[in-house]
Length: 246
Image (cartoon, rainbow, N blue to C red):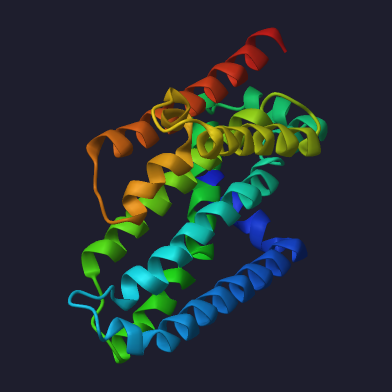
């Protein structure tokens, strides 16, 4: 049943014209930024050639591209998550869904898996673009895998938080605004806090930075798993209350 819900979400996403517009716009931004970084890298090649251990194309081009994608997803994901449950409640189809022989966990995990699969398809162009660099230089496979892993975990955490906010209201716009406000607030607290502040540990983007630089830290991975799990459980609890109290 969870798989059916996930497939239903995927079909509804691809059926919306706005999805294709966002897809085209995002690929344009990715391509523009990628070519801009590549041009800058080629321009500084004479200076890099004089260094004993110069940074490669993966560090100079790929890592900033993944970092930019992480910021874009922070703004984009709430737009997609806002309708997952809020629109169901507004259209009064959530009551029908809750009255069916489907558990709240299956509903939440199905919607989560469906949107996450869509977003992973959306950002699949990143490693494909970067793979073209292999035609002219050697890539740092470890750094690429680290960035891909970090971006997947980061996207999952964004989806879980956005899904929770979508379960709190009947207005998708309010859900998107709330999720974006929390994510942006955590990010601003991270970049504005002193070096030893605990605020850094609360920000998903802060924990992504280690992945972005090629450092695989179990504490960062544990943070993303815990962050995602907590908000999925909160969403399930919210739907359970809806089922009990109507």
